[in-house]
Image (cartoon, rainbow, N blue to C red; front, side):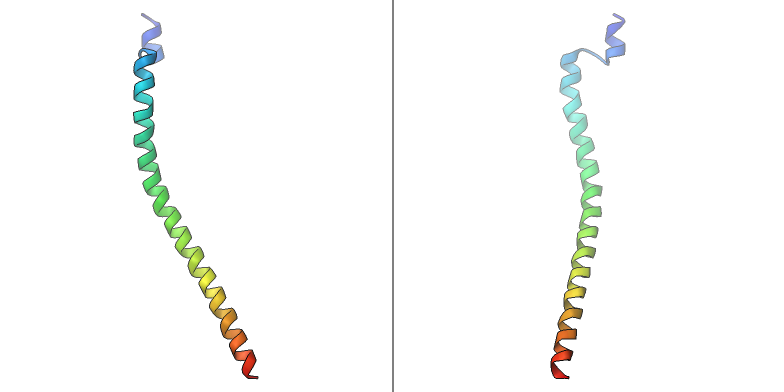
Length: 65
């Protein structure tokens, strides 16, 4: 009897509830992580585009001089 409460239930029940709990946690984490990653990606893409544009303008201007 003492093994039940310390174990958190029978191994079968624990095994069945653990993936569900992980799935719920993963969904919650991934939604905030996804938003964070999207923000990071947008920033990186914008930065890359800005750098490319600046290079293009610099090449364009230097070709006239």
